[in-house]
Length: 96
Image (cartoon, rainbow, N blue to C red; front, side):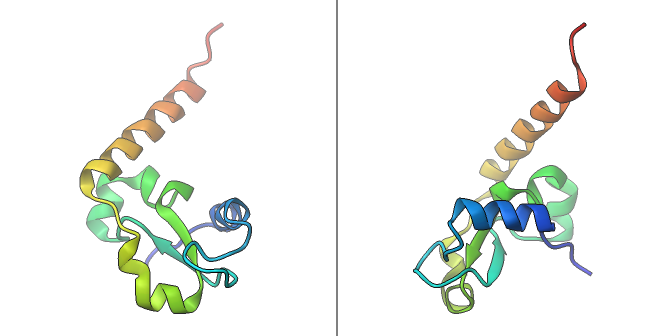
């Protein structure tokens, strides 16, 4: 089974997009992975793959017909993953 976006991520994206599809004015119905949700993607970019940075809210029609407009390449995914790791490390290393 493929992992989908958590309720928190979906809600963050919904709020950021004011509940409307990224492409039109219809309500959000689906959440699309901008970088594909694959086994390889899960191994290479575990923090990024299911984060709000890899999610776009779309209506059903736009998800079916225009999802190819919302994609990124490995270089961008790698940069997001590195940034998320850095943020996670900074949270864990609190100076005394």
